[in-house]
Image (tube, rainbow over the protein chains, first blue to last red):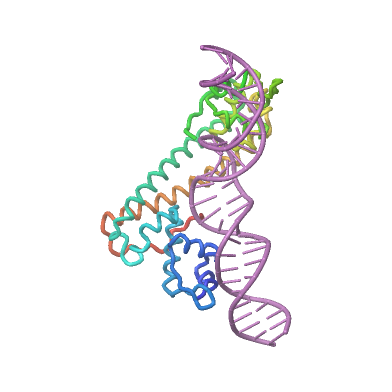
Length: 128
Length: 128
DNA sequence: ATAAACCGTGACATTAGTGTCAGGGTCAAC
DNA sequence: GTTGACCCTGACACTAATGTCACGGTTTAT
């Protein structure tokens, strides 16, 4: 199939499909006129890419294990665990930071609403 | 004082101080040789800017109320509440998304570690 | 008078996926 | 034989604060 059809089927923009190809995530052959031609398997590939992108992984990370997971279950792809754990650590770091900022924000909003008189606003610390 | 001293005192890079000025957050006069000259009050201004940047506000948002909060308590600056509330809403949206992604990640990691056989990985949804 | 430390502006890079435009081929249908 | 739908590549924009480099002027001390 050509790129337009793959785009319609997967809901991924043509622009993004070309990008995934440039990042080495998806393969296509070229028709004599230069158009990309995709195997039906490309639908699965794109769906899998979407899934991992939704986990917040980068195309570079995905490329490190995509070939494997397209052929096996994730559990058989040793490359994937380090990526998951790194991402999890990153998420937790971000969650902690956002939680801290949220607490500071709520504090300030509450103070304003309650007309607090002597609140000190010296140090909100969160590494930015 | 000149920019180097203000930078040392506040711990903010010279680059950033110039940036804040371009964004209209901090004022300076120019010495005859073209160097910026800062009032001692600039230290407070920069400290205040740092504080709001650490809350995740942009320089544009800060500029909407900085003049006011430098003269009054926050509670007297009507401009600040909409900014706080907008930021809080954004933080909560991000927290929800990160929490969802984290749950998906933990699920997958657990599945791999437990050697689950029939787990389905169809739809992780979180708007990216 | 020369080196060192300071200051100035302007511009590009960083993140990373996606939108969008320019400029141009290909092909089917009417 | 022309319209319209499809495809191609390449490039810039976007977010937004900060780092960094180029290139050049100023001041201070030796």
